[in-house]
Picture 1 (cartoon, rainbow, N blue to C red):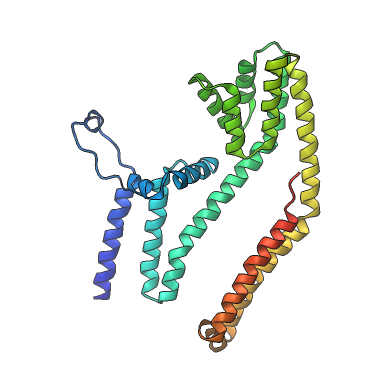
Picture 2 (picture 1 turned 120 degrees about the vertical axis):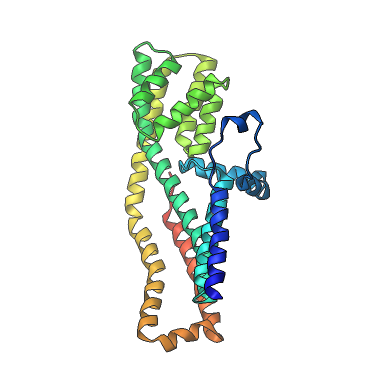
Length: 295
């Protein structure tokens, strides 16, 4: 009976996975002749709401994850249910842990990809501005100079600038598209570039010299930020070690003294375990706040 129950649950979740994956549309469906199949991703987006969907879409776009928010949430939920079903055969506690692990792992993965892209974008921005200044001094207009500089840039900056150019061709102003790019990539340095372009359009002057000055300022700020990161590297490493050490000691205790380790999951031991976990979370955020300094 247990085996049949597991097989039935697995088949049901497998059907949910098939429905969650985006299907290929035939021409009849595009013409409305044939009804489209049920889209669970759209239903999940309706449940999420507009604000949560917008935040999730912004995070996925920043991480360069080309999946709709509803499809992404649905796939994570299906994987969580599958793992929880497997863990339920061993222990209810393990099932609860496996139910939460995919959500935490995907959140960390998306955040890591997003942070990696924002750092790469910030590092590539001075090189892009230098190419832009050289193109302007060669006689190109601003749009042509941005296109020429984007062709020489690397990802992710090239793709983001191409997206800005596409928005401009669709009728959006350049400054609005650049402001949107600055908010999307969480880059305050780009706001300086947009401000310089706005001031130049209102007052006139040599845009290439203004952008060259802004580029020098950005380079100086990045150099100071790298020094700060070097000085705080020991503190950040200490935070990682202090966070990982309790889990390593718990694993050693579980292997060396399983009887004593089991006492942590009932009675006073459970209260101590919950209190220690809360103190670990508070300490981690405290250390992160102390060692994280933005210039």
